[in-house]
Image (cartoon, rainbow, N blue to C red; front, top):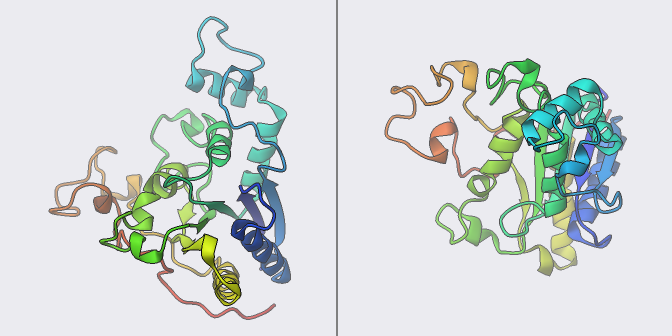
Length: 273
């Protein structure tokens, strides 16, 4: 079934691995009959800094409250045009792909700024003016899929369960769990390409093939098994129940599956439409 896909990507170099994999995404998804929309943040010269300029019609000109002004701008239709357009893209999408190089264990600042500005109060948080009622598995983006495609400079062994950098899925927990699962996305296991700066032609071709396989099965893969706030594991909506994840603490306790997993939980076979 044809779907709407948004690709948000951030790399200033057209020949980079990130941009090559964006091309794979675009071509593969369109070949399946999907509609693909892109947000090329560097080409757009996206304003990454979240500041007073985001609120041209302030509710309170005396003191800048980001939550208050974000909610006021969203409710009153007074957001800046660039933010409103990106929100429109996300709301129209059945899945959002985020493709970027891993810079200092996170996304480039321009992409973090995209989330800071686009995830408005009343949309990504404070949904339906209900405070924290609709979060971690609920919210405006419930039913949509999200997938990170990461280009990492270091070798895979550095991101193994006992590797010096830490497991990739745990490093990205603030993004996958915090920025994406919080407003309701079903977040798929991260796709990472390691040693991105030193791939030879054969390895580069393999990286393209591997990513093509992930993209072709975008709607068949099982999401990361994050625990839902309103699924019964958090009776007070804040802390895990005593009988859940017994003996565990930290990030792992909030995942029902393997917190170190970086590959799809289920395999799939793509059949051309």
